[in-house]
Image (cartoon, rainbow, N blue to C red):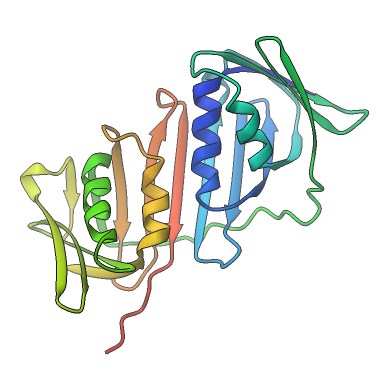
Length: 245
């Protein structure tokens, strides 16, 4: 059983975040809210999300797994304004998701969840922990996209850097320690990542939100941030590109 009401802007944010990784996903509903885990087809990136029931206007749910085609949900949400209320119900008989906004009702067939596993999240003990505003990451990545298809993240006791170079072109974003929200780094660490994945992950971040990054040399980067008035939480993992020696 599922019956919930949520602001369109919150559901749009959920879809935007997940679509950076996958086109189809399994929504896990419980009494506590919505949760999900997904890995992209190339197994380069992972997303884990929780949306507490307090993020909903009203919420009533039993343990329910729903397979969602994100493009269909996205198209429906384009019919709504951010302030509109969206009603979500699970129609057991037809195994469909019933969505309502204003005077529009759409019944969406659900996907078979049999092949949608909940991937296990690796336990990483990463030596670097840095927090900074989303707008800094977005600016650095935007500049780097004009240069190369990869981006290097360097963090040490003195600050944070994004760096990208190709042939004779290079660009660097450098943020000293006193301009970061928080920095826990006892050593210098540098890792390389595919810029298209990293750019997709950060485009869903509010520019004034604090983003937490955890890093280790040639380890996946862990990125976390809150949304929906801190009733939602997202964790991304992105595998590194190992630099040739």
